[in-house]
Length: 385
Image 1 (cartoon, rainbow, N blue to C red):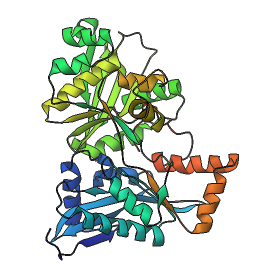
Image 2 (image 1 turned 60 degrees about the vertical axis):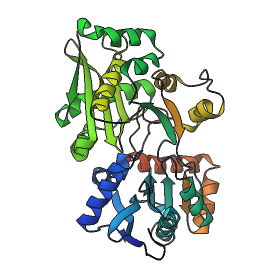
Image 3 (image 1 turned 120 degrees about the vertical axis):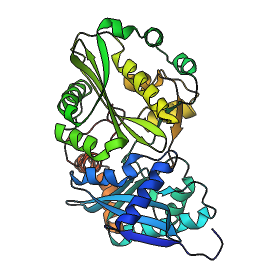
Image 4 (image 1 turned 90 degrees about the vertical axis):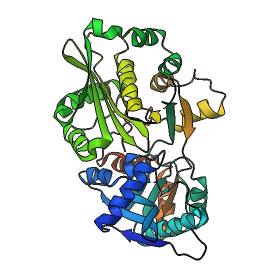
C-alpha cells in the first residue's frame, strides 16, 4: 500500500452486500480466522437477539481488515457489544500499522458513541492491535466472551505421526486396526435433520458436567446458517446415537464446537476419540491445515504454556483434549471498553459483591449464549459463543 493512499472505513449495521461478501472472503481466506467473524454467524446470533455491526477497512475498494461486532441491549446495563476473534487484518498487508490504527480508531468511536460496553477477544497474533486499543482507553478484560486459546493439531503430518501423539494407547490401537467396525460402531456425517439427536446428546453432557445445553432450535439454526462452514459427525453403537461432534471450518482450520455424549448407553470405550479421528482425517482430506480442539481456559493455558507443561492440575476435560496431542496457543489479550466512567466504576464495584457478580455472570451468559441462566463452564465441551 503506497504511502499517502487513504484507508476507507465502512462503519454500518447494514453495509452493501458487496462489502459483506468481500468481508466473508477475507475471513475465510485468513489463516486462524474463526466462523464467529462470518456474516453467517451474525445471522445465527440474530436468532438469539443480537444484531451484527460491521467495521471494515478498505483500500481502493478492497476489504483489507475489519470486525463483526455483535450487539444487543441488556437491561439495566444498556447496549453491549462483543467481538469474538476479531478484528481481522488480511495477511501480507504492506502498511499494517495504518490499517491497525484505522480499525482501532473506528472501534474506539463505536465504544464512545454507540455502545456502553464493548468486549473484544482478538485472535492470535494481533497483540499490536490490542495495545493500540489500550492506548485509546480500553483495558484488559476477563469477561471471557470467547476462549482465550486452545490446542491445535498440524494436519499436514502423516497419519502415523498424528496417531503417535495420542496419549491413549487403546485409542491408538483401535484407530490403527479400525476395530470399532467389528464392535458395532458406525460413524456418519450428519445434517440439520439430526438436530434432535444432537440436542439430546448435548443434554446428556450438560447433565453430566452441570451446564445448560443449547436447544434443538439453536443447533438446527447453527447447521442451517453456517452451511458448508459446519460439519456434524455422529457415532452410533448398534444403531443408537452415542456421540455427536459439531465442528466449524474457517481459515484452513476445523474446530471442535459442540460435543454431546450419552455415557448411559452401553458402548465400546473411546467412541468420542474415534469420532474425532475420523473427522480429523476428513478435514485433512479437504485440505485443512489445522484441527483445533475447541478452546482452553486461561488456567489450562498457563499450565501448558507457562508451567513447563505439567498436566496433573488440569481438570478431566482439559486433560482429555491434551490426549490428542497438538500444540497449545494463546490468543492476543482480551480487552474491554466500559463507558461512561460512572458505569465503569459501578461495574468494577459490582464485581466485588455477590449480587453484582450474579448480574455480571448473567450479562456474560447473554454474550455467550443469547439468553440468561446457567452457562457452560469455560472448560466444558461447549465452545460456541
